[in-house]
Length: 218
Length: 217
Image (cartoon, each protein chain N blue to C red):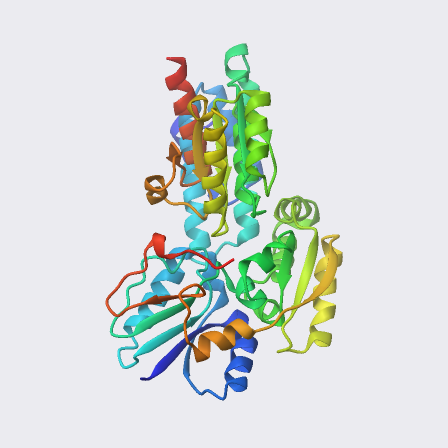
């Protein structure tokens, strides 16, 4: 049975590393991280990728439920497999519970910092458009309840090369910076199976993902 | 001074273009023309809808969404200050908070600002609010409305637990519960004992005002 992986550019390093570690060579269809800002657009893109992949027997989603953007997706001939996590941060932590311990953190990896809509670019753009005083007000709202920038050390990218960028962001918004080690084990489990229903949502061919399906693993 | 129709269009355009000077000018104009509050809300709502569309097209960014909320707050503050009377100034206490396990506060803060500018006494419980804190605040402040917000997937579970806690405390029948944020859609009402779901900040404001009007009549 041919397998396709739908991967997000945000976690490209981690997916490729997991693929390498498992000695697997699945085809990958990449989605851009910026799609996450608009749930409807992300849902449409994912459905288009499913519809455009009639020759695969299984599609593995190396994503989370992404703000429930996966709700309403309908499987074609291929079975769909999703990790039972709300988003890719929980996917990197290995569970929602572990992420919730750091819930007051703004999470970064190299993948996020490379993204076209990352927070630093947003800040620079805001300074240009609104000037310093208004930008300060806007970002006070944005960061009001965050206490730190948490740089997730997944072991899949150049941490030392990424730290200065993370520190610049932490300093600009008067937040602490913490490096948190995480493991891409959950990625490997997605790639290899078996797909324990407690950890993975499996959607049979022809079925549609409903809101009731989207229980996450704590 | 522009006529009312020009000022209405001007306010919608000013919100859309994120122009604080013109938001102030056209709001003042509409106030001086004696325009009804509901019409100004409608202009703000249309402006915000345009901002949302521009965001979805990738022309606007998160900072612009936040700033559009701040501009609505500005407009409503001008409106409320101009019409402050014993009746309009106190629509009563309203409780708002981001439910437990979630700290995404931007939408909640925008809504809290709009409600406050519109004459509600907003009790903002903040983010990551435990069910018990909602219950205690209902006992303390006796609000008619309780607004729960959440963006994360598991915020839905926290909303359910919070509503159950309110019911267990015997308070469910005393409050109108309104849910909002990225984690909810209208279908959630079939699984949760809430009264309504709001689609955006102006919808929240309108639902709260409609409820208060129904209670008063």
